[in-house]
Image 1 (tube, rainbow, N blue to C red):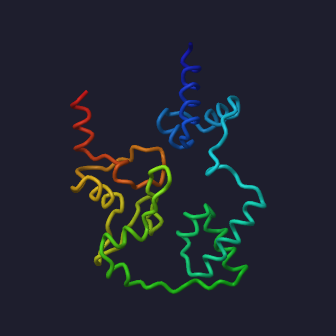
Image 2 (cartoon, rainbow, N blue to C red; image 1 turned 120 degrees about the vertical axis):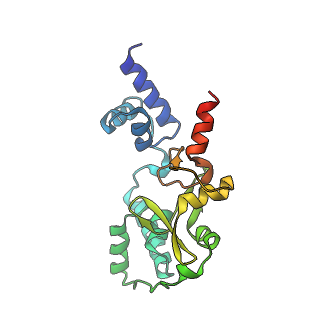
Image 3 (cartoon, rainbow, N blue to C red; image 1 turned 90 degrees about the vertical axis):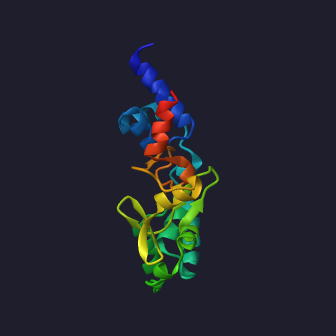
Length: 196
């Protein structure tokens, strides 16, 4: 078997296991065109939670999104629940004349770290924890006790019982996951390397 065939077999195996295109590209250092071609040629379906939605499905989701927007839900809550873009949410808000709720800007200073974490950390059926709270670029920000914390570091601390040492790296294939069990720090990585 040549190296191209072996690479495509590895791509197919990761896709069949439910890995995202981003995870496959990062793990195997391949381009998205090759990943899509393998998915198409081998008839590997996109997982239902990531598949494109029909207009009828979008209409139902938009009606549900409007209902929770009218109840005061944030953009982040709507995005995480329905996978709608910020532009689509803004369009729905304007079309249905839903005012932007006034947020208590001081609430983050009064909440404890655990309260703020519980408010924005959303568990998924596959064991991942997604962050629905504020972000600074790719960093998940947790505003509590009068300061800004890194939500991934808080999740790591809650799971491992200690502060992370060095950089924290995600080990799962879910891009937005902050689960403490799905992250390693310098100490864990060195321990694993030393045991081989």
